[in-house]
View 1 (cartoon, helix red, strand yellow):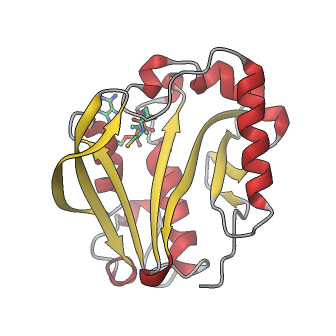
View 2: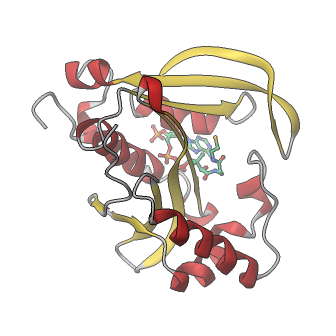
Length: 198
Ligand SMILES: CC(C)(COP(=O)(O)OP(=O)(O)OC[C@H]1O[C@@H](n2cnc3c(N)ncnc32)[C@H](O)[C@@H]1OP(=O)(O)O)[C@@H](O)C(=O)NCCC(=O)NCCS
């Protein structure tokens, strides 16, 4: 694959861009310290902003390879960093990206992650050259599954006791979209502005 890395992307309400150290306070205040956000994730809530800064530095170091996909989500209206979306695993041999995301609780249920993920899918297929985008969620976190479904990912199965999170050992739901699904326009909602021609 010819990786294109974390390019700046834009949607109606959002800018998706590389993390900067100056995002540390927003990340701490808006999502990283909130146990409601981390409930179904594998990391514990942060307890101080210095640890967030160290995490962001590791993200910044990761950009140097040009083959990482790790965006902070900036809300245009107020310029705040409100969440993140990233490729958490690449399977090079099948051109597959696994995507994960999290968002500040204050911004839930406004269609924001659907908007961000929709834009990332378009980029990963049309510019980065991936063929398959998959995402998994805890069976007890159906809201994340709804984001995936709204972005055109199809249900592929539930892997029993196949993952671990802050909930312990969990059943994993696997959903995915292929580039052919996306380009046929059949599984991707037209409301997200993605058709065969764009
Ligand atoms: C899961 C998460 C990313 C959803 O982000 P979001 O921006 O609130 O999702 P959207 O607003 O795009 O919602 C998409 C659909 O999911 C449903 N949904 C999302 N959150 C919901 C909630 N808390 N309660 C009920 N329905 C919800 C809505 O039905 C929505 O469909 P609609 O637009 O037709 O109403 C966000 O809640 C989050 O960051 N949670 C914590 C971290 C996490 O669980 N990450 C995913 C790990 S797999």
